[in-house]
Image (cartoon, rainbow, N blue to C red; front, top):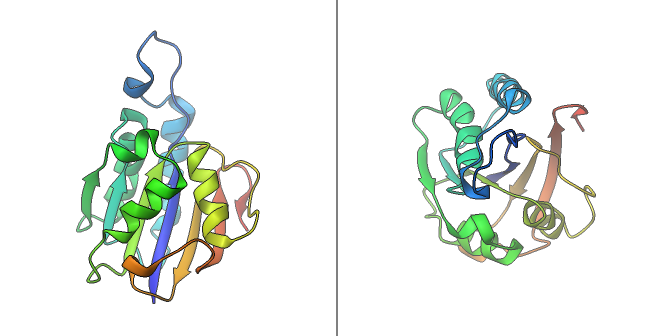
Length: 162
């Protein structure tokens, strides 16, 4: 069985006039990313590969996860930045079968659509910043389709684990 972790980047900093792609995390985002990494430490099936949007705020969010998974392969993929749920599904399908636990990090609204499409139901209205959903996948990555993953849990900075 494969494990798929789906993460929305942490809260970004709007205090400076930067292009959207270049915005970093604000203080709350940094705190939430650190809290996420602390929580991940206690989990099983930690990601063996982390695929993130190449936007600064997404990459910075996944840096926290990398501290818990130092041996994980780390890949940035520009397709995730503007991609929709179908794009994210294509990214996941490209993962080789030797990887049994994968984390993909992106942006709203597509990351919320991706979570709900994988579960084939409305798991959440809006995945909050630094929100994380976990799925069990009982097929090879290349065969994954919407509705074919089992929703396991949702972790949000304010709501804890559901």
